[in-house]
Image 1 (spheres, one colour):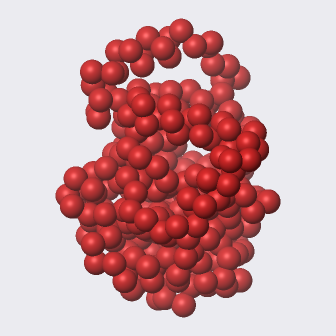
Image 2: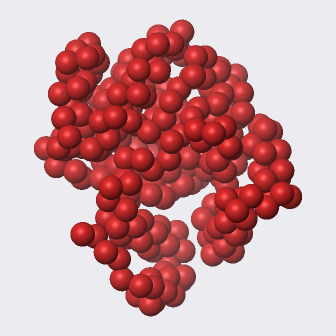
Length: 272
């Protein structure tokens, strides 16, 4: 399997550097290329890539058009027959990408595969789930809240759940491997989602064509989760609200007016 690794970065120079260092320290055995898409960063991220890794393909966007648009630029430029969308705030252990590619290659019915994600302390991330809908979303949020609080039975449940390979409705876009043919068949990522929920929507589009989404713990990747947006939390929250509403308008239009009312009643977001 010929792989393309697409990494989108926005003002995350330190994260991007660490991510690329792990890839260079233990590169995948599969034939591969790395495409870095800089989303109009102002922190010298592009200059870092040019100076330290001049052989990498670097796409420098002149404006931040969103995470989906940047990933789409990377996918269009990439040459692999399978594409790994990889967050800049990840660390990739030796063998992880090969293991993920191996599981996708071994399952002709799977169009997408996602690895087990863990944080810097080794705690599992619930990086897959059911299709976003009101009840499923409420369940997922309650589960995550209890997990973060360290509630024993929930911690044990999440640990067990993330140790079992299964077909799911979606896997996290922090590390998502997709066959190029399937990505192109659905028109790549929907660019109405500037940030957040684009992975769930993308998986839904692929599933609608009969492709399956595989979660596999055979591969494990560290996700440092959100460091690139820590300095702009208000902006990220605003983007989440817009994407969340866009998702409901697309997939659950009857619920969209209620969600819009709920968002209006929430406290205003500070973006300064």
